[in-house]
Amino acid sequence: MQNNLSVRKEESEIPQYRIGSKTAEKEDYALSPVPATWRYSWSSLIFSMLGGGTAAVFLALPAQLAGEFGLINVLLGMFVAMVIQTLLNYTLVKTASRTGLGSAFMSRGLALGFAGSAWTQIVYGASWLIFFATEGQILGDSLTAAFGIPHWVSYCFVGAAFIPLVLYGIGFMARFQKWTFYVYILGMIALLWQVFTTPHIGSIIANEISSSQTNIGGIPLLGVIAAYIGLIGNVALGHADISRLAATDKSLLKGGKNGALWLSLIPYSLGAYIVFGCFGLLFWLVTRDTNPGSNFVKLLGIIGLLLIIVTQLRINLLNAYSGSIALSNFFSRFKFIPGRSTWAIVMVVVGTIMMFGDILGNLGQVLTFLGVFLTSWLGVILADLLINRKLFGFGPNHGRFIEYRRALVKNWNYVGIVPLIGSTIIGSILLFGGATGKFGGHTTQYLASAITFVLAVIGTVLLGLKDRGKNYSQREPVKWTRDDIVVECPIDHEVVSTEDMVPCPYHKKWICSTDCMATRNCGELCTSVDQKSLSKILLPERTPYLKKVNEQLKKDSFTNKR
Image 1 (spheres, rainbow, N blue to C red):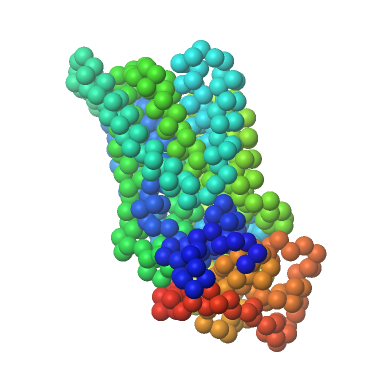
Image 2 (cartoon, helix red, strand yellow):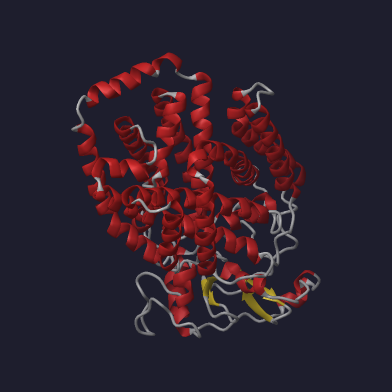
């Protein structure tokens, strides 16, 4: 291999965990499906996700909402959010771990098309930028509160500190999250000790509960749920991007049977929404400050500052990672592929600039608007995945294979594009109309995301019944005639799944989908060459090392067949 394998013993041995190049260590297959040879344990991914689950936004949001809608409505809304989040997570986690596809690649095949899914990645990347800026602002505010330095200095310092940390992939992130998790837990214990030793804490809590009993449910509860919807959509898609790396019973590293459930439940649904959401409410009740960046310092002084620094390092590593995946996928449509690490730096720079716009102070409104687009996107891909494919059997291999490759997937698939655009426009009209007192006022405003989701589902199913899977791909794929599971791509010499390979008449070789996207000036020759000519292109040679790996994987080959 031209790129040295990063996890490898002797040429005659098969590594216990992962094989791939140094590039794979940094990029984590951002622009291709994750093969069976590059998977991580469920426990390491849970630790990685806990970095996001312990984010300060999950402490700040319920406190902000409690001041506006009442404590009891926030507690009810948190429970509803937990249930919805877990169901969405589990559906996407199972699909991503089975196929190795993240949200961007799923969207191509799940009724949107190669070009049609591109704009979803821009908004998705923007959502991670919003979260990065929010968390960075919290950290910057804590530095200002502790040392009295100007906000602009704090924000610039925070941004500069993240640049060297975001260059590496999930392996570094999993280790970092594990090292800092125990520090975070000790800090939370110290904060809770301060809370529960506060004089008359019982009376403070009781008075807040009593004052919020006069307006339970109805519009206030809808307002809480609407704010959480913006988080729910983003978190669910983020679960897909992380769980594409998860070990299964068919990968080189074997995964546990209940890993998908625990990943779907523990970091965000239970940890972020319920446990840390309640912590945030307690900190707010004692300090009357919704910003963890300053209420940590009020409760613990310099120790609180150190704790918020650890917290923000944990979450913003995940924010930058997820955003870099989205941006990588968007710009790959234009054959501009500088690498995931480059986009991670872009995330940090732009996110730092956004801190100056006080994202934190307008978090509830930002999340409500974000929820409209994300629920439309989720409605399309879930309807196509669970109804058009699983129920009706439309698509390759009775709907189980999700076609994502540039050489085969159509640029635009009206089955998903029309409902995506239509439901987003209607949802936006309802949202802004309701916010200005029209179309039913706040009730319509808070229901806009739910209405958007339902319209996207109905539209995708109706158009799917009309199309019956005809727009999933441009043509029938040329069959891979060997029984390999993984192969070395002859262009970039990366280890990839054989399902990722396509015959390329321009290169006169079988190449991986990443190199297909990166190839310029080919004129999409493969779309005009007949199947017989494509089938004459020879398969790449087997390498002795991968031959042994394939022998080990054959009995556990992916069920996601063409």
